[in-house]
Length: 350
Image 1 (spheres, rainbow, N blue to C red):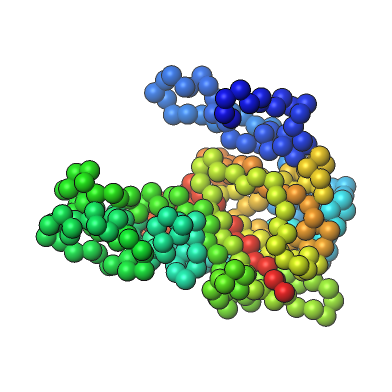
Image 2 (image 1 turned 45 degrees about the vertical axis):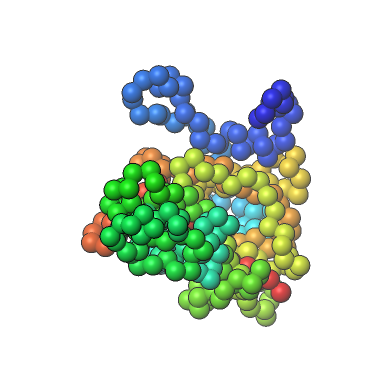
């Protein structure tokens, strides 16, 4: 807020905004002046739909909460829908642990690679091998301010040649020059990675075939009979501690009858699914690693967002991923995913 701009009270907020505020991460002020670690304020999660628990109950006794329908009887591929939101489908635990690990690795190492675009392109240009550079504690330095230009006896490491005006250097060669270099740690850039794009839309690159096949298989429950989903574009979103995704519509495609396939990876989150107006009270539901959401038809006109990710041990629910990434070269993925969520949204453009 700036100047004397009025902060809206709850009576002036939309129903969607009130829900965002309810679930957003806030810290307890009592720890503000102490040296103790900041503690999140408690949040009432009693009204959050939990499809993992719903599935367990359904498998045990066939019971479903009011307003929730089961589309398929295959216990290995359960699909739930909501009576109040036609075109919305929830597939809990759709991805195996191995698949989750695969797409976490791809999302961090392959998807941000040029010619794919990321949020960093506007300032730094295309950045090659960001995850590797972060792992090796390298520093991105503006050309003309690098150690070479300052007569330092060193060379750029694994040249980030496609970056216009920036190159990666070993960290010690930059620190030896003090503040003379305009630079940023690769690890900081990785944490500031917010999105990457793949596919045809906006002249994006090609979507990997394995991701296409997965999306086709997962999209089937939301497709008109006799039609097959054609993945043509994707956006990968990266969430860290305190990050949110405000209420919005995915309205860039001309044909809304085709679903968006949304894959969740990493820390658990709260997903809000509203109606066609921000004044419609949204439904809140948990999204865990491996869950997949489909939105097609009328559901494409519903506002939706992510007001919260859980990174604390109690609520993140990533123990299987931690065990999978707990050795050798995978430790770098473990360090990242412990406090992060990745979301891959795949869509048919034409």
